[in-house]
Length: 294
Image 1 (spheres, rainbow, N blue to C red):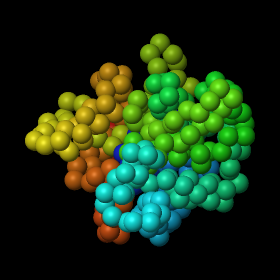
Image 2: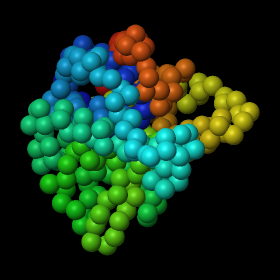
Image 3: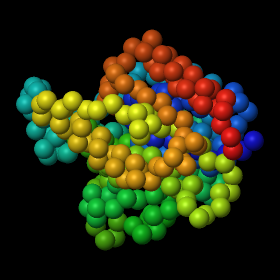
């Protein structure tokens, strides 16, 4: 049976999304259209390209996550100099290795640009800091005088994954000037609204996979210092838009995967921890799908 799927952001915690995809496949469900933000955009793109969960788990097992941390070479390497790069370059890491990896995986399936996929098969969320707007890729590319047909999917995914201050923003060059694009989670970390809207008949069942507790079950945040305040501020900012949208009606179509204890930027995960996250995501999906009525 075909369904539409939406995957939330969550950085490294997105490994649990791979497990959830495995559980969904185990139940005989297949995705017709997919959408996602940040880590969810990566999984969505791989699914749209035709990868099975088994294939994704295979190369995730071999992948050294820290290889994505492509910092700039500096003459005087020390912690202070590294943080100065954040000031000038707006991010600790370039993000080029992440884009390269995504490009290679998609190209292996013959997918490079959005024209290589059926219309509306894949949509990802990013945030335009220059205009203060949420953008849906490839839908909104025309507004930037860019051709959606020829736009590289790997570039769109990197835009959606550019976590502020961690990865450098992507500069989208247009005829009207440069636009700084960052992580879609800044404005919508879980874009289920793309496929599931009030008073609009759904084409097929829509299933969301979200890396969090249910709204009413979220633990309270302890804010005791500036770092914890930044974390709480960013988490609140990411979820504010989507929290207003997700109602009890929508919750019945969402697999919630609480991933407490794993940091969004924990790129040094051990192989055992990666496997644990994937298996946990699969277990959450299978438990949910036992009672899912669509």
